[in-house]
Image (cartoon, rainbow, N blue to C red):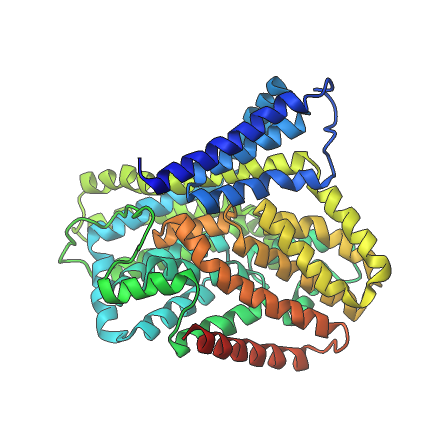
Length: 532
């Protein structure tokens, strides 16, 4: 056995021994009823253990499973039978039930990508891009712009941008890790500042009952969402300055010099590894994507009740993306099959052969998403929300001027540990609303800090669904994506933390945003000088 593999096995075995030993050492008689670890710091231990194991061993499936198992044992007070009940029923089965719609959306998009590749549409777009996009900077900026334009939903953003831009970035030797970062950095951040998005709808629901209507509060919070806004400044500046740092530097160097887009880890299988159809045209890619965008928007509005009399804003507020997106994607899939068959570039048999190919391509993302959601369920059973709420209440008394910065950090940690930004701001928004004076400027800044921290923690977390789907969209090894993205996300997070400290004394977005942009660019110049 190789030395590196032996180290991974040893780390996993040690973690399993700790978990199993705990089941005997700390076994409690109270297997039924509330966990004795509920609403304590131990509620956050399972996700942190899973994340640490994943980063150490570079093996995500076993790491997540160990975290789920530990969460079940803590929930059942170390009773093994009770832990298995929690693991199976409240963990994995509940995860599959709650994410079934997203599984369907993933599979449909995988099938559509396979169909477009089979038709030669992706290859045709790649040929077009080689003529019109002539540099690595241009390819990166084009990916960024497309990510910003698809602001309706982060899941939709990740997979669509990945499938469209992968041939372009590959032709300019941009590593898959860098592509995954560009996708991830324009998925949740753009959705968090777009008033017409599934994220705006979710925030609006959680924010009802404050001094403002939900959508009004969301819009007022946009100028102070420093993490999302400064991430865009960071991407543009980093791209134009033509340098990278941290683990990303090795991936990009290897892609440029050796043409190796993966460097290390699993080389994720794609659906376009066969000879391209020479009759394919760019329209064979563009038209299905446009139809997909339109039908997904209509699906979200339909599920929200727009066609039953609800107004546009209310429909987006009441929609369910796990239903609306598969609804729209299924119509787009049927359209794509019929269109390609009528174009006579794909036969019906070839179209049906793309169905299992698309499913197989999405299996890794589905598995990781299932385990990550099960781990979130375990964290919820242990009352992580109550523990974080108590921390926030205790901080509010003596640290009033630093509250926005504290809220930002708490939201980052909670989203990182649980892998969900929606769950994080769902927990924190009512707490933030209670801390500040209703309708005050500081309440708006506090809400912005909460939303920005939720996006930041979600951006950094290996168990975040958006992070997982960004890896799937880029066909990048998941842990490569996490390890290369982390230094970039932490850099912007540190700058955002400073901005929230300043916001307590200068609560003016027109002053703070230019300062933040200048600070971001200056930080990159310093890092570039140090990196040399």
